[in-house]
Image (cartoon, rainbow, N blue to C red; front, side, top):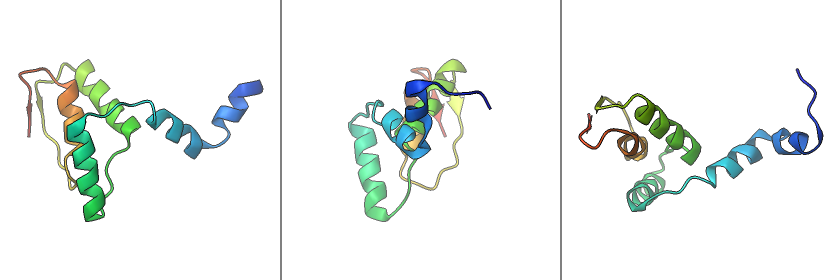
Length: 92
């Protein structure tokens, strides 16, 4: 393991805190906000904003036109995938 210096140690010492800080930088639109609220009402867990941003990035990098998702939640991950897909893309 490489030696960490100064501030890096503070930032990476607690993974949960680091992920919380990263999640705070992801902006969510009204559709995502509503889907998250519905998940909370139903007692379901949805993907974190950071994970959603990664899904959006992957869909965009692949220039995805068709994506199949098997989900059990309220559509949070699907919305992120749609945001990364081509405008004429289809999410199934």
